[in-house]
Image 1 (tube, one colour):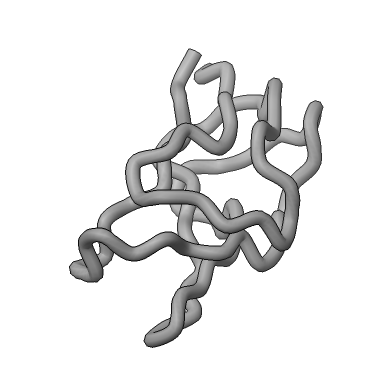
Image 2: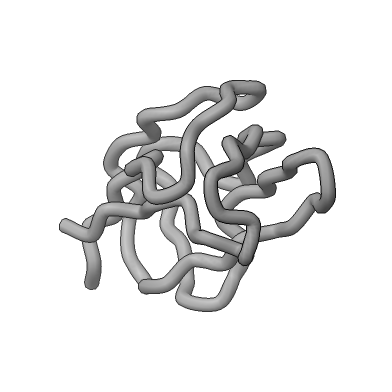
Length: 78
């Protein structure tokens, strides 16, 4: 099981907003494809999946604000 965490995009100490998910629980994802979109006061960015596998759990809803390094999803790697 791989834990998907909010990356530090050089804006340390800032919370980010999960704008939208491109997948749902049970969906398959491929390494390098967009997994979710996040934003803060300075940027909006799509974040790619680090692995190929199945999304088993989404822990943070769209619109939620979370700190950097927060686990927001789990993927069962192939």
